[in-house]
Figure 1: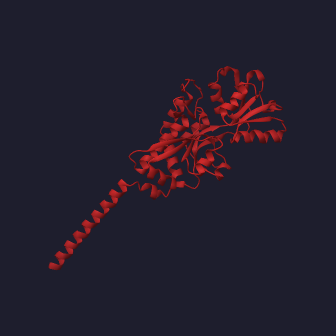
Figure 2: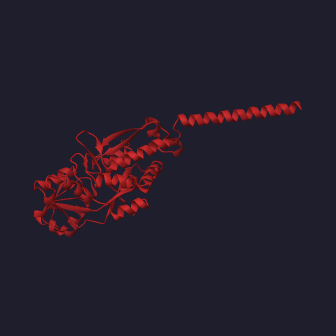
Figure 3: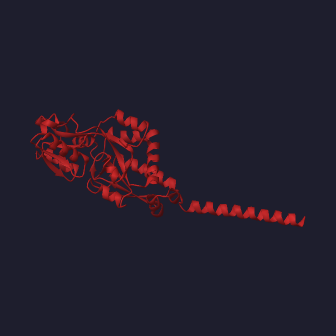
Length: 313
């Protein structure tokens, strides 16, 4: 009987120790964001350690990613990335998360992601196979095609009409590569004017230094909407290639972080949040000048919101 009592007391003791150990482990997991370690993600580990997520943005890519006169980064892509940041905060069980904003140009965006200086680039970056060799992409958040804008008075209706003319495009973009490839293939003898920023390329058309500006059609629409005389310009129906998706630029080989980003986007896309953000930037007055793009949600983008999936074609 005495031995039985001893065994019972020892059993209770071990049970109590087990409970205390479990409680200690639980408490440690709450106080320390172990989710980052569990996910085995260098990006998430850094975010958990610093309680900071770094977003790359553009200065003049209306309405996706730009800076208003008050110095604030705004736009459609920025709003989506803020939602992603909140999802990351909740997943890592952080009490707060700081967002650092870093300017990422068309020429520097890939290097900034690859070097870890930004965690994601939130603008209007086309996802294609060549770029996926260097970086990763989220689910698409926009669908667009490369076209050109010109002055109506120039009567430039087709790509062939650009033959022998000076045409502007922005360095480091898919668009300038498409322009140059077609220029060589069709022997159009186009003189390509390379600009650092979209605003510089459009200004070349405004000031008659270039006959046209080649870029994603939605970005051309933005430049026209915010110009002094929107009625003076026309965007071509001719496209330099098939429609392509924009994605949020992410570090390559960090599948856990990419999965978390896509989880956030899936939720936003399917609960109506993304459409509300879209309407805010494409169907409503946009600061600082309160111009309205009046660009309804396309059938292609509606399909993406309904059934998000990776673009790997």
